Amino acid sequence: MSVVIGWDIGGVHLKAARAEGGRVTKVAQYASPLRSGTERLLQAFAEARGELGGADRHVVTMTGELADIFSSRAEGVEHLANLAARELGNVWIYAGPGGYVAPKDAHKHHADIASANWHAGATLIARKCEHALFIDLGSTTTDIVPIAQGKTVARGYSDAQRLAAGELVYTGMVRGFVMATADRAPFRGAWTPLVNENFATMADVHRILGTLPADADLMPTADGRPKTIDASRARLARMLGADACDGDDENWMLVARWFAEAQLRAICDAASLVLSARILPSTTTIVAAGIGRVLVDEIARRFGCGCIGFDELCEVTPESRTAACRCAPAVALAALTSS
Image 1 (spheres, rainbow, N blue to C red):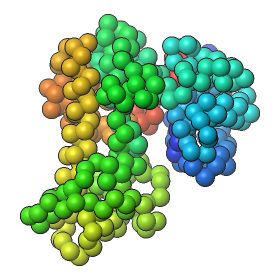
Image 2 (image 1 turned 60 degrees about the vertical axis):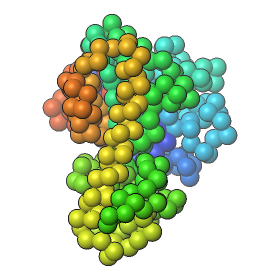
Image 3 (image 1 turned 180 degrees about the vertical axis):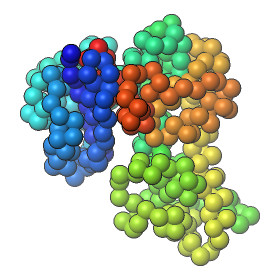
Image 4 (image 1 turned 45 degrees about the vertical axis):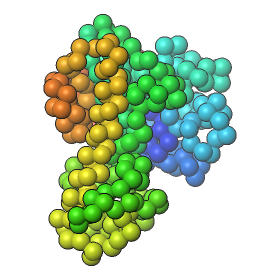
């Protein structure tokens, strides 16, 4: 029985999934922000090896090449591929439609490797569903991928192409900037322009609303203060040039609802653009993944579509289902390669 660990090296998280004979048995996620260097990533690899154990093969996808410690995406791909090979051993790098390449050849295929993690999850879904719209709403971004006639039919592949096609939206449950979600908010009966500073993130919005999963936010807060509802209110108030004491709890709940609705509108707009290409039936099934699964359920309701979890399409141990839904690319790589 083949044992494979799939890895997704992101700009702030390392995600890993262990599969044995196609069955996913363990999934884990670690904070590993690359902005300050690769030291934390190396620690995360060590923690993951201890938790997930050894494997016959390791397969790697990434988005971490976008980190600003690298001068280009090509440099980032090459560096992370070599790092993974050094830390893990028998490693292959996922190059989307190009399959798997050896780390030493990653620089030759950097355009296919860079930010291809969305393609891994979509490929697994395409093997299970004739038609589907895959929405993976994570901590930083949202992927929207159409699958038709058992094939991934995305119009874009690179980040730039996918942004233009509505297949990539830079908004997420945790790291999304509030000031990038809207430019004003209703407060105490008036429209209030926002301060263009990173005083709060969407984690604060969803923490106030109770829609943020308890273990989903692994990053420090914008001001370094606690991850509490009171502290989130204070951070959100600063986006309006105010203090928390300038409103009561209901005021800040209403402000948080406004930003959450603005985020949903942005994702729904992008999904509408994708569906407008008429590649899929307008009431196609939505496959939901990411820590924002609850938001994807709401998006499906608005579009009148059925919604299933990504984990429902995989053979996963019961205790790993929630994590598998949140770490779809790593899970897909492990499942596809070990079966």
